[in-house]
Image (cartoon, rainbow, N blue to C red; front, side, top):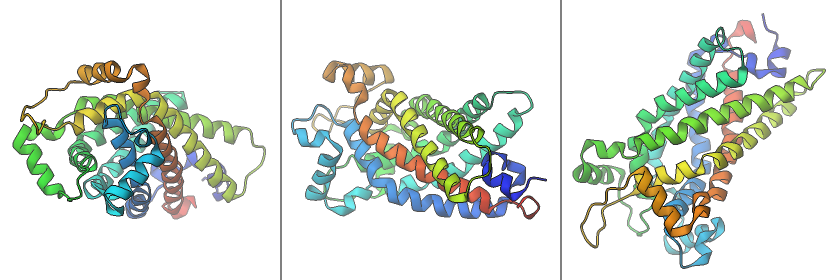
Amino acid sequence: MATKEKLLLQPSVIEWDHIDKRKFFFYGPLLNFSVRAMLYPTKLIKTRMQVQTAVKNAAQSTVSGQFRSILRNEGVRALYKGFWPDSMGLLASQIYITSYEVLKSQLKPSVESEVLRNLLAGSFASMVSQTLMVPFEIVSQRQMVNRGESQTSAFKMARAVLARDGFFGLYRGYIASLLTFGPTSGIWWATYGFIRRFQIDRKSSPSAEWVIIAEQASAGALSGMVSAVSTNPLDIVRTRLQAERQNTSTGVKTNMTMYSAGSDLIKEEGVSGLLKGVRARMIHTSFSSMLLITVYECVKRFSVKPEYA
């Protein structure tokens, strides 16, 4: 039986069968929602920077410039445009983390490398959750890039998408989402597992709990930066595909593809355009990773069955 001291020293030993699922599925969504609400403005700014074409106003090409522009022109509420449909991702998040934990556990007997197990489990879990999440992402992103002062409800936005493109319009950019979030998730978990293993292996004695929490937070932030930079070009293409709307001035539908979205971006802004919004994405991903992994590891400790505590 694992001791409490060992569980605190090496949180990775808190396996799926050590967890009380009722506690896990109660604490997880509650704390996850709080973190999402805190970080949502950074996600909105990142999305706007990625979908905008070459800006005439240099101030809007920076995170701080976008933030000030939104407050000045649209008000504080605009920082949470699309928040409610995005929050439907709480269900997808629980399915994601459950898929990750279960698959990682199933791979343990056949895949010796911990990094490879994390990579495969993270990628697969993302594929599962994206299948559920993409329609909500579509609606959320359409609301995010709506710069008008009027607030279009999520329901009206969804109806507009269905009227224009039919059911499959809600899955616009689905393949791009899989190709973006699959590698992002796999790289994140592989990097996090590698950093945590390094942190654990260099110790000769147990650490205080606050030290472990700080190490987990730093590992999460670093993993977020690595995954954000390495997959940013794919994220730009995905975001542009999903945020694309009918040209209201001509009434003509555009038929953007992954290839055309990427090639148009390079033509307009050069190769450097592939790193558009990377700072905002790094800020959002590193902070969200730091907070979410800290919350996740705490949820696991809160949810440990009595016999393993």
